Image (tube, rainbow, N blue to C red; front, side):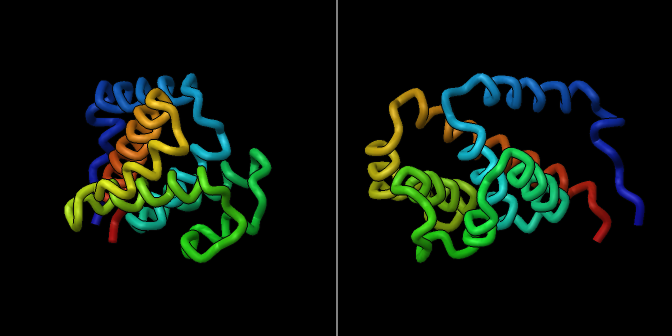
Length: 142
């Protein structure tokens, strides 16, 4: 079954999404952390297009293969910093927000690792990749 291409049908919507990407590109979050967050959310959402795209992007910017492979089991991995662990925890909670919301302890752990500005940027990054995942999944034939 062929599905619509939202970028083609509603190009202004895509331009708005790219506006968010431009904002994130100028944020204080490192490119490495951004790609790991994008890949982690895409893995949770099972957006195969985005998984492939962000795996390739992560490799291209030099993220270690061990980190990429450890994302599925980040909680038990020693290859990630405390900052990355806090970012992945908030990513998991916000990507699955309907399950249990954003627990105070996860938010507090993120507050310890990120400035207020960085935390706002992290939340916007997570919201943006989740929107992209939903667009990718909705347009992919099953």
